[in-house]
Length: 137
Image (cartoon, rainbow, N blue to C red; front, side, top):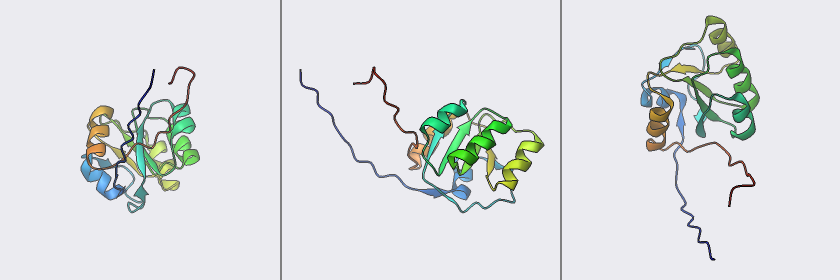
């Protein structure tokens, strides 16, 4: 049996953190950090092991997880901003660490699905690498 694969070349735009905050109706929790860094793509995850395994550098991370591991993972994975979904706000020590590391923290009232859709519609692509498995054809 023949399998046909259609490859569609899509053109995605880049944006900076300042533009991101507007698109997602966000509130910046670290106003002292630069908002000019270019975002190359995005991902949504609550398992930080997934972020380390599959996210390309210079992405934003959408997450509902509000602990110190999110900032530490962002450092290691070269995440350019963290967006907390559903209006979540991390503890002050987490905000302080992110500010020290120059990682913008943003909170948005929307959930991961809504935010992913808004960002994709605005031209931001996924930064998640496809992890091959034995079940993929």
